[in-house]
Image 1: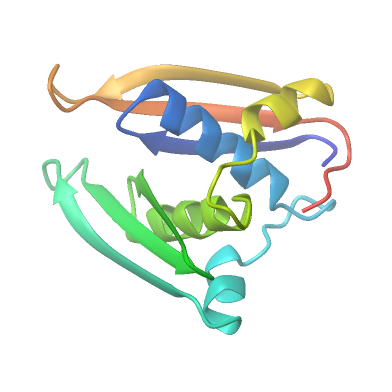
Image 2 (image 1 turned 30 degrees about the vertical axis):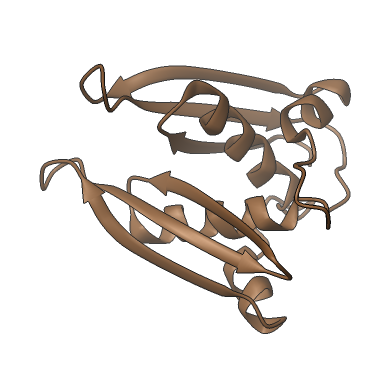
Length: 139
């Protein structure tokens, strides 16, 4: 996706980076997002979410998406962001449940992935990762 940048949050650096990379992979070439949640729901899957932490000005939501026997969880600063991230992760998971290496795929095709810790105490950190992919990605 030419010039596409996506951001995701997670409770670990690796989770945030994989989520951001997965989001880049499910973005149309014009930069508009594929409706990952809609695609999962439309093909018989489910997506649910709840607020799990954070003060009113910095909430953390956790969403779980299930599709064809695969279950993935993601966190975000809004319910919609968490749901889209979880649904995107389900879409980039192999049928046997093992994940595609979204970060590796983005890096290997000329993109970049970077992350930083943005909130939370030591026992409950929140990381934000940003992935940018300059080429065309197949989803």
